[in-house]
Length: 121
Image (cartoon, rainbow, N blue to C red):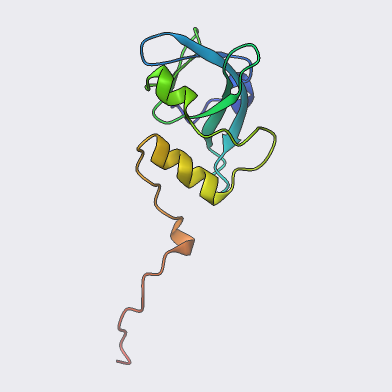
């Protein structure tokens, strides 16, 4: 998804599955802690439904709403962690596995590159 989109503009937008069927309305948007980039959206499914978390990448946004490139059944079967709270690393991992997404690389500051031999060696 375009990273220049204001996450607040997604709230209240309709969300559609890969076949164009409405799956619900975006309730909340979750940002990546390290980058501040919108990463997940909580979509309220049905009138008395639950919130299904959907990945914003590779979803797309247009005038109609948010288009999530997954089947409705997969989206509705996504883990529901409730809204209004921070997603833990374990919960985020569950979502990556549910959607069969590649795990993001850790931030460069957390990587251990090891020691490179210098002149004194």
